[in-house]
Image 1: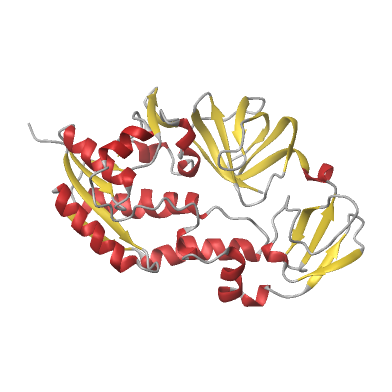
Image 2: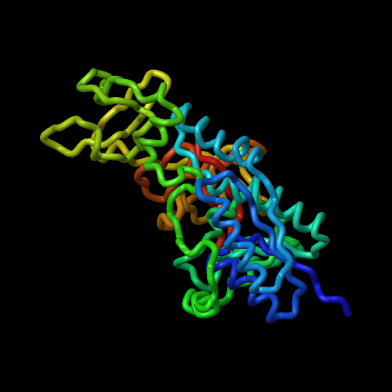
Length: 342
């Protein structure tokens, strides 16, 4: 009987390295596939990843996705900021790059039955459909970032570290010369730049003086670029007052930000556009939702559903719902819908 073939999206980090080791132990015929994205210092990292694949004794290929990454992820990131949204490039990268281009290349060109990654995620089959499910290590869960890949993709996906602890992952790779040992929390293509410095270098036209407004629309001060502010931000506005004021609105087109009291930050609900529906969502349904990565679960009721959007109401008002971020609906510990917050 032939071994099942699986190609692993391989960064050379702890999680993808552990995934290869676990899959080999389970008897799979394993190969590795690494993306070239055009990041600073990438060539040196790729050499280490190649060496690690030799130590692991798995066939290894590098796929050049620089152009597609620039068009599908980096452009989405900058375009979102230009119209006043707060983007989530990791969600888009997973959806449009890793679980589309990388996965398709690995399965077709490397003749594999499955595509595997080192994400802290799990899947479950219910009535013939596949859903993302929380892994054992819920504190490391990454299913929020995978929420837009859709159930059809999960048929041929494996998550080898879904049921093991973080300590076990680290123990599994403790003697390995990792090619990518740092666990960065930053957007990879910022290449170490702080966000404001990235704007100054790549989007200088948006770093210009504009007005700070109060809730009545009166000018109360000046800033040096509305693009750099986030709804809910309190510090860094350059405006001082006797009470605490927060950014409650930004308008990149008019280059203004509006400051208000904390109470102005609360919303009764949100709407997501172009939702990925993992199962049928009905008006009047009750779910839990996350409005950003690892935010606490909020109880919601669906008030309207169409092909293009889902509108929900919170049981209690929620602070700092942010346009451009991803709203994810859960039923117990599985994802049932996801989309960009309008």
